[in-house]
Amino acid sequence: MGGNAFASGPDPLPTPRMPKNVYLLVKERCHSILREMYEVVDSPIEGPGKEDFGDIDILLFGPKPGLPQDNEAGVRQVAQALGAVRVIFIPESSSNLAIPWPSDVDHPPTAKESAEGEEQSESQIPAVAPHIQVDVRICDDLKKLQWQLFKHAHGDIWNILGSTIRPFGLTADEGALWLRVPEIENLNRKRAKVFLTSDPEEVMDFIGLPTPGYWDGPFATLNDLYEYAAQCRMFSVPRSVEGSDTGGTSSEGNAASEGPPKRKLKANDRRRMNYRPIFRKWIEEFVPECSKQGRFRELSLTREEVTQQAMDRFTVKKEFEQRRQEFLLERDRDAIWKNVIKVQVPEADLSDTKSITYRGCLLKALKKIILEGEETHGVVPGDSIKDENGFFIPAAVKTFIHENKDELGSKAYGLHHEAYLLTKEAKAKDTPQAGES
Image (cartoon, rainbow, N blue to C red; front, side, top):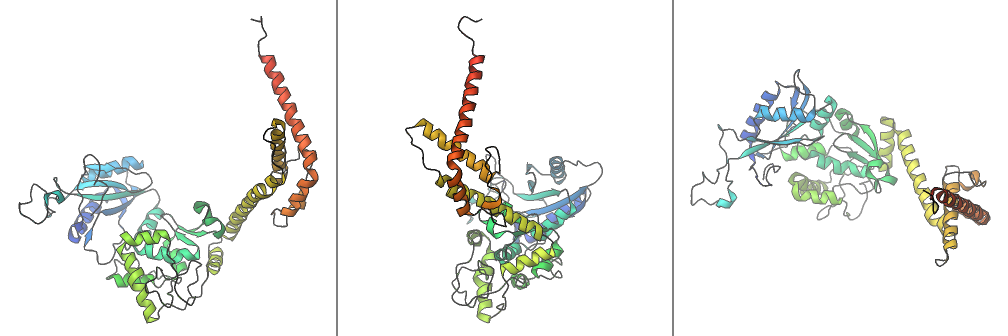
């Protein structure tokens, strides 16, 4: 029901959805005011066929001389210029402004204005005059502004494109297009991402979308938007998708498979269908219709092929492989520690303090020698416990532990005991004797 940033709290403000004529009028008025303050003022291209709008999104760059460079101060000054009655400042994102509904434009009735006997109950009618939510973001870089315009153009188109390219290891977020490392993505999504580009033209070219049409204005119809999105070179449709939960590509990034469709949408996409009607119609209507007509079935592209293409085009092969290798080596270290080293050292007798201490000293020594390469104890396994890629050889690690654990245990326990005695002696020297002042 419109922008909802001000809908809750102790003193809520009604911000109902705006008819298209009101939206366009208020947006242009805001732009006109803000052009006096900023070098670049723009809003994302609207989605197709929209007749009402919940809020107005405005992006700004380049404060003119005399205006504050600080982001928060800039937002406050913008709010003042637009006549905002309330502001919610959000760092590194769009801040929310509530401006009065223009007095020269019809607005939904308030409770005071509503006559008795109308169908709408008084509880549904706001007690105060309606406002308009304006979301303002001041960008510190023109490229960031251009990316925001690109990513948020045409309403929900990037919900569609995002679900299409995701199975192929690509992610487009609020800042750029990224290539995901498959071995990392399920454990650490942020670490799995390798930067590709933040240039909209490069993104469209790589995923196979034509530039003409994207920046010209809103698509005339929802079907026009779908037809444009379907030109993405990673989009394809299984032979039958009726009644299935699928966006047209398999979880492995190859949609050319035969047989019955699988449930392929991620949980986020299934949730998105509940509140994104354009995305829901794409899944429930456009994709099944394409399947019936036998369209978009030629794809044989795989995730591995797209990964190689991305590495070549954006010259990130070294970073991608290094990120992957570092992660795999870390995981290998963890596995050797948990599944080999700790297992090879017998459990201590919990009733024997010395046994517990001895095991702890031995494990600590083995960890330093095997995993950290320390030479303190005079025993060095060298490269004999690793293969040519730097991964541990479990059998070799077990042999090393078996052959050296007694010697290492004695040395480690001895060093621990010496340290204990030195600490005890130092404490004794620091403790005043009886009779000393």
